[in-house]
Length: 596
Image (cartoon, rainbow, N blue to C red; front, side, top):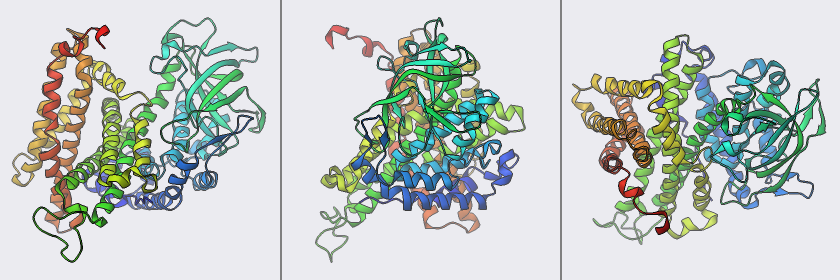
């Protein structure tokens, strides 16, 4: 059976030494979160993930969710008790607004902790994760009455929440939504329609589920300009906060799917259900994007988390499993065979996974800290720069982390050979669970198009210009330090390739939009590689500083070897990305449709 150990020490090293945590001390919530508090929270949260959530992962996958004749859904054995302990422990509202009962800690801390809970049990972690995103949308766009009615119990975890976008005939193209909202005399709306693929849409973890639903008010314009957002509770909430009658929303069925079996992915049928408008009429996408952007960052963490837990188990197996002899002579002559780890190709797979994981964790934390800056920095310019950074990097890390997370789960499965294909070892579950991350909250092809078509040209390219400036300034500051050259040189080369690719898009994308579409996936992955190289340069600089101060150790020193491996064996892919995208759309679009 698989196991998991939360990488608390690595998270703390990144915060303290690489990302210079003290720089954020001027942000309002950080006064309540010195590093010793951060360490205590992560240690306790990691322990909960290891001891409570991880043991339920395999059984939850095997048992799955079940639907009764009345439409109610039961989660796997142990989930309800685990959720009760999780919510009562205050984990749901870790970064929640104190006005609604939240602990008011920085957002990055919730993101860092989510890596651990997701790695331990993705299907479970989705229940509170979706609730947090819905709470953010309500807090931003809901009126005072809606916020007071729903946010306290969502923040405490007493109620969960969902996001209802997809319908049978439309997924990415939300302009095709047919769900109707009919105005009622009491100011509410009657919501009628069907939504599919609704994660955590029905379950037995809480007494109420608060659905955020996209629908079209009768007579609204066609397309995305006529979509509004509504809060539709499973159970009507009275003015005093008490629960009343069941609303007109029911689970029609549970989707039978490849992975995340412990999470109830539902078809929800709305039959005149009472809903209340969130924000302005016909501006629903604007409001829902608060939740969607949070969800995309959360899904990026899912890619990293599954890559990490898969690595941990594959590495443990490779050190113990005896198979064959080393090409350079026996390494365990007293045993009938050497451990798998002696074989170069096994090492290649493990090192590729780990070199991604450690840099991706740094990039994830940088983006999460930038979210805190964007939300609460007292400096208006700092807020703007941080918001630009988060917007630019969101499609990059969602697309790259989940593509790579799935690929890494497959590599880890390969390390186990035939045992990786057998359910009891757990690796095939990681592969199945990781696959959805590339699809939901905007398929990765859509993330790439969003990056190229929206994020790059936004505000005259202000965000990408600032990103180039940040990376260039950091690398320039170390150009005269010979010890940094093995790490800074490759990062500078990757930055140059990303700049070349950006210039190519500027020159060719507008001329022929198919060029931008054809280049988008390679550009996103090139951006990801350059960003990870930047993180490895920052990590290497921090380790060298620790060595100079005499405070390093073997675990930190190994990061320098990983940084060199990344530069030598993984970063060359950036050149391939540049070559592919620069070839344009001609060969990609040349074949007539009839030939497919």
